[in-house]
Image 1 (cartoon, rainbow, N blue to C red):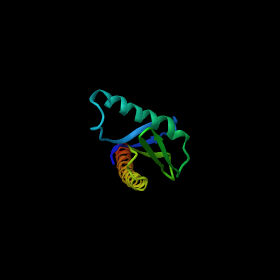
Image 2: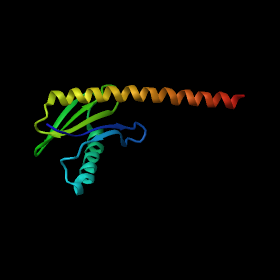
Image 3: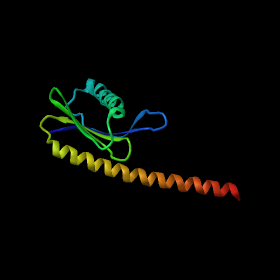
Image 4: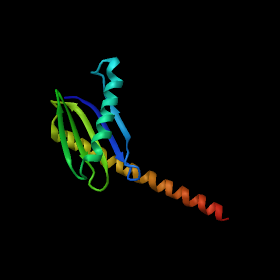
Length: 128
């Protein structure tokens, strides 16, 4: 039972590009010279698959001895991806993805509020 990566990607509604916002890798079981290749492959999977997935859906894809579990947010085009070996339980994978999405959304709301406050403060300073 091993998780290789948990990655959260967001599709920008303006330009339709997918951006990786948060990532965690545990590539200790991957050879040193292959680590960057594996990371780039994960990013490629996210960039290519997220725009085609419906909101509020779950997906599991198997490739050889590994799985990619995907959970897409219900309200917006935010996807959480978990790459693991075939022994990792699917139920635990989706629980981890839901928790990762919840934490990401809470942090994103805090960032948005602080950004908005900063913009309002700057505007009020210009009005003086």
